[in-house]
Image (cartoon, rainbow over all chains, first blue to last red; front, side, top):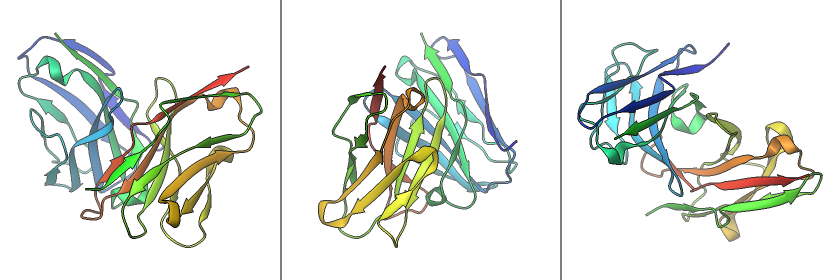
Length: 113
Length: 114
């Protein structure tokens, strides 16, 4: 089954404790992206990757890091989480570009206290 | 700057009634347009997209959308809603300066009355 998986689905952590949210897709997609969703703000893009070893900033990259060492994986790293990073995070992938239409993961709800 | 507006935060519709969700965008030329649906507790799913050609686009789950250049709109419609359509709906437009990024509306939450 074609899918995007994210782990963990729920995470509660404390300020400053480094964490990684994993994202994996099994569709051999070149494009992957991370979004955060906050009430009333829709989706805001954090980072995206056009292919292995090629990443670029989205609209809200501050406080986040990504890497794309393998085509299927695109982890999101929060080196020093802060409460304003409490949000619902989505990973997405598509074949080629965002304009083709993206497949989304189920989301990771992160709470930073 | 480009923007996408979904004027309705919430819409309540009776089961079996017709539905129209509004989406307006700011851009002079023909953009790439999308509607996504987010069911409770789940990720987003692409309903339909418009790039060019016929301005009435058919999507999954019985949805359709019509691109109206003169009104800068891309409204989503369904002739008869089902309780399972209760979800949040997002309109998005492709950015003119990047094939890799979209601009998203804030979403419209659809509530279905039995």
